[in-house]
Length: 573
Image (cartoon, rainbow, N blue to C red):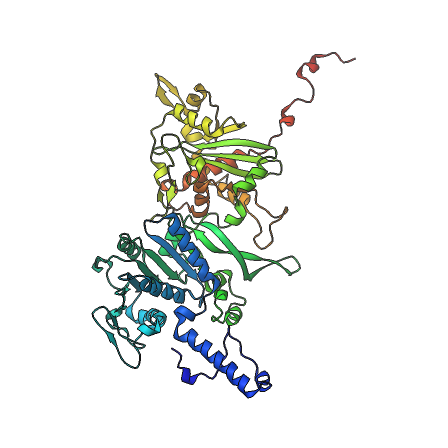
């Protein structure tokens, strides 16, 4: 807290600039005295009562907006916000402010503040919480506030006595530490929980259950020093970029070394869990963070260090096979697709007839410029076209899990369909559009089974019901990578020079429509570590079928003979 007796009004401040000594010297004594007194009062109020008079960066308002949007969409249930921030990005102060505000806004509210160990809580978390308690409720002049409904005993060296405090409105906060066993947590009902740094998944799970009864808010603040940790993975796997901004420390230069643009960094992500979002606080957001010093410190640093320290963006440690895949580059919005599809296109279907789970299918359109658009997936989720009659929205194909490639989602649970049911569904979603060719995984489709005492293949059975499929490259050939190197071919299709602006000469050849969330998730998360057991492999296998089939745009005029077929029999005169 600022002692007003030590303020002169001449102190430097990033947001309340002071006139120079020369300018002050030009003022009359009474005007100068009045100016300095007003400045002293502003400085004092900001430090003494930050809850009411403290500066709030714009990114704080952005976080408030995300909370409000989630609560409007989900009035019942726990909503979760992960704030990933660069160093001194103000994430801790924002969380402390929100914790106190939740407690004072209504009586008998309950909150937890969580840290790794008690010493770190007392040095990095509890002081900020104490500072945001309204000054009329804070102990002053060495007096401690006690009473039937109030207990606020705090010192800078020792933190809150017994790691708890009770406000005059009977709202209470406890401070907990990950060093303790999660099994020892008492069954508290909470309105708000703030977890600061390095929280583990088992603690997250325990806290969620404490928040359920009161429809609480879980706020996690994190500087991702450890990169793509298990907690970060839980929120970022399958997340969709909502908004992004330029990274001024990551310039994009042309061949002459001139800065022509800046890399984009995420600002808001929508998690696979619809009730959770990720917000990135950047060091530049905080005027008190000495951003210029950060800029100097990060000069000539590796890109990963800049992303983490200045923007809070973690580097993924998992061996994702398609690291260049980028929402802002490869994902096509629906309104843009409405314009693109008006151009001449050749459309294909690719099917992975999975064993023990539903089939996974992709529809891909190729244009004359050599670009390919994955414009439909089945099953899908989260949009109107994902609805399947009598079954509804099946949900995600794969979800984050302990495996490197996640775990099976609800959409993989078999519907128990036969071939006629699949044919009916394919015809329904296609709605009489023209499909030039259909391809299906050859190993599964060419395996002969006994039907009516005759060995037949799946391709033959599909032909019998009026659906002609070609055999895509065998799974063994796809998996071997010895001759086809299909992963590299997919990488080539996704490639663009990220150090140059997107242009006609610098753009990928493969895109995905935003209404294909399962495919987008797989392109982001698939590592091939789990191989045949990987929950994400089926969308990738369909893309491999497309890549290895060698199909592309086919002009109808090219298929027509140059001369009528019967002309060859005419006599030459």
